[in-house]
Image (cartoon, helix red, strand yellow):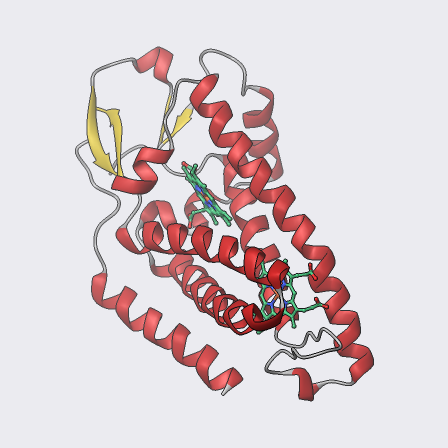
Length: 230
Ligand code: HEM
Ligand code: HEM
């Protein structure tokens, strides 16, 4: 099995392409990025665009359900167990970030792992509160009738506040990717598109396909959201 952490300076050997991000993880990523943009734009426009806002938000909810399940059964570098590390490891990684011999990680690094959780959690809160939100005029989330108007108003305030949390997390996300590119000379974007990373002497492919499982979970996630808001 491939060692997911390598010290570049020590090893420094020739690299080989190794698959790191499986197709479902990449698809979910780029769909999430696109739909978060759609949700922001349609939320800002309001009015007739709110119908699309709701659909986009529900699609995000289904993607999040999928991603959480995939965090348990997906291929190695997509699993939470692969990238969620304890505070000491995160601190050690963060402290050593600027050192030239800092370790490189095949999947998410210890700090990036927690930023993934933070982004997924913030998006869950956003889509979840949206279900109960209202704009006092035309738009009511599909589960508005489950709660009182006062509760809906409170959840709408969370919805409106939390979008700033999402903006902040996405800005940090893009900043971190830029940092890796400019300071560390590491292109993380290409592997998130192609699934492949150049890695020293790596032959093992941790991103093995589980297409049938992905299709089944995607169906279940979409079905769950459909049943919820039907
Ligand atoms: C609203 C916009 C975005 C959101 C919500 C978002 C969210 C995420 C999430 C949740 C992950 C973890 C992937 C996983 O394990 O499932 C991730 C990883 C990643 N994202 Fe984004 N992303 C956004 C935009 C972008 C953009 C525009 C780029 C490219 C410039 C990008 C590049 C990457 C890369 C390279 C990784 C992998 C990082 C690594 O190697 O550890 N993301 N993103
Ligand atoms: C992660 C996905 C989502 C994002 C990023 C998002 C973002 C936003 C934004 C930017 C606004 C506009 C606030 C303003 O400027 O007035 C808004 C409003 C709203 N959203 Fe979402 N939203 C998401 C999911 C949802 C979902 C799933 C629903 C319901 C199905 C929903 C229902 C609403 C409602 C009813 C409003 C109007 C609240 C108001 O303006 O008072 N949203 N959302």
